[in-house]
Length: 110
Picture: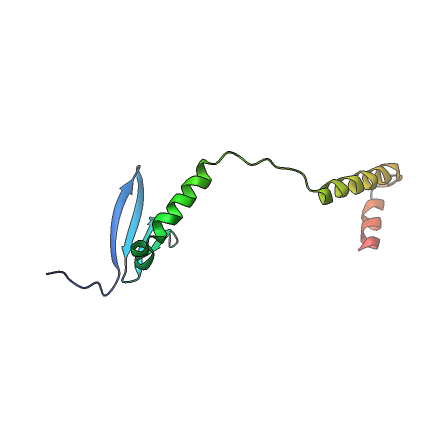
């Protein structure tokens, strides 16, 4: 005869030398690093329906996929040009002639 699961059941285990807490509830199970609340949750409904196997296969395929090529968006390239223009103007501007001049100029622009 089996006992009905009415409340959470917690067990400690070690995986690859790291301590984890397994919490089994009527809704599902949760495997979290010891001392943490969030971990890997799995609902019983997903396990029975096969959704868990589908999610595992998807995560594995994404993890093993080749790295995607990263291209620079056009907006970023335009922003770089604007930044270069701004830098050129700033470099051409005369610097402060006395120590407090930079602070006064900065306070006027705020």
